[in-house]
Length: 226
Image (cartoon, rainbow, N blue to C red; front, side, top):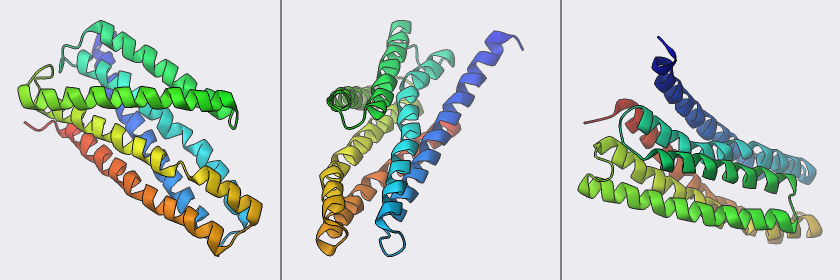
């Protein structure tokens, strides 16, 4: 096999590797969050340490999410599944690079106006990509255009739903910051713990939705039904 013959299977392998990193690290984030809830088992300092570790581990699924956008388009193009314009593939890689910069720069400068600005920009970017993938999926499923391959059209639609569910994770989890500040200022009590627990419980439903959608999407990509 020459380089060209290795290129497509290598892209598919990296695509699967990103899926493993995304889902695997996200499960790690979920488990750390579950242990943070156990105030009878851990001291408050230990729980805060778990939360700090959660934030670091969460960088992996966020990076995988950003890279999955251009890589999925590249795999579709290289495999001949969709004749997506090369300019769109190149633009997707540029968008992913900007997205990654936003994620890691916000983490580096956390709790600053710069981080808040980056996260706002990242939010707008995700909203736009969510709308684009939902349109692409629905249009392709209903009309067979621009994606003619059925399983790939459904995969695009499901990816848009993954965007929506992942966005809802951040939206639902947003009150944790002020509630955590109140917990640190006033100490652990029913008044400070229960609202925090309620927010984390509500967030779990969207986390489970992302897991289910990721599993179905990956099944479509591997089995390619129809």
